Amino acid sequence: MWFVFPGPEAFAMSSLGYLWLYKAIDMLEGVDIERIYSDTKTTRIMREKINLIGFSFTFDTDFLEIFKFLEHNKFSFKASERKDTDPLMFAGGPVVSANPEPYKKIFDFFIIGDGEGVNEEVVEICKTLKNRPKSEVLSKLAELEGVYVPSVHPAKIIKRTKKLTECIYTPIISGNAFFPNTFILEVERGCANRCGFCLASYLNLPIRFAEYEKIIEAIDLGLSYTNKIALLGAQITAHPGFNDICKYIEKRIDAGENIEMSVSSLRVDSFTPEIVNTLVKAGQKNLTLAIEAGSERLRRVINKNLTENQVHNAIDVAKNCGLHGIKFYGMIGLPTETQEDIEEIINLSKRLKKKYKGFELSFGFSTFVPKANTPFQWFGREDEKSLEAKSKYLKKELHQLGIQASISSAKWDYYQAVLSRGDEKLTDYLIEVYKQGGKLGAFKSAARVLKIDTDYYANKTYPYVQKLPWDFIDTKPGKEFLIKESQRLISQANID
Image (cartoon, rainbow, N blue to C red):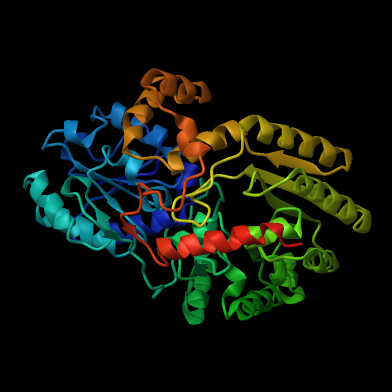
């Protein structure tokens, strides 16, 4: 088996999910698995010996590297055009778990939802039925919960959701990783805050926590090999034992151990002196804080119930604990956003800059991308020229305040939205994009060649009654809940 990560080795070796699933499959009897990256030059297992190929699919544009891999190894792009003697190919990860339809003609099957457990079941079936006709193997795979086999035409696929019965951690520590020699462990999965645009939250509901004792066991294991650890989770401070985890690390540091610890971004209401003190002692100099929008009105619309006072309190704690700066993460082009909301980002920045002299403040912005299986999946994007004008204005105004701001490309985000809300009609389009080089211009010219209306996927706001390509995926809390939540959030738009 080849297990393909569509990015360089450095990124793969910092990808917790990819490495953990590799480890689980590698421990199965009678399975020889090899990790493959976009910069792999030669493989240990010969192509002719491969029976199964799995792909990690984390980002929308990963399809470009996947096609490059297929072309390099002389495989047809479409499953229907590959021979019965060719290996079966499947994909898993957030992109295809949310909406696999643009890729349904590429792969033989998909893992929908959490990969632990089901990946091993899939590999065992493929091993048991090795050398049997593909149709027979796929029929058997289609019986598994969380496995989507397009050729079997299922009416419903239940998204696989796994209890966190163990603490997921890095099985391989590498100096070649993007985060070198770092032991990464998952403290929790999912987020109970449920921002209206957030796939990471809705895709991973319900929020689940690893047991405190198992987290401590994992930390002890990691620290026996390296002094760098990273705690992962969309809402890590919601873990009921998070303060105790911090105390445990702080105690070891106070005893003389050199431990470096980092965390994914914190929520404003979790900036407690106890937590931040531990992070400062563990070497953190800056933290990331997701505020998403400048006005409290727009934050209510997206379900980011956060006040300016809370932002001030967070910076007070950060500064008093010895942090050097905070990077704010925001989003522009959100549903119901007005120019006033943009001005509020600037006004907030002015107030913070005046109050916290010498404290480093910076911003990172992306533009809104509607994601499948979220309350905002029905809302189209704002016009590209309008978004670019907002980006330019924000950058200029923040620069004048001495605040650095980075903003994602509205053009690239547009095509991310096309893929996010795409359907099976996009398969030939994606292949054409790849053949034309995969750059920004290729997306535009491929649409012209194949007469694809990309605005329909990216910019159009859909009625709630519209049938969506991914409706066949049975997720919790389900489409009816998403409609009600979407309507509830938008109803906040005119509340002062």
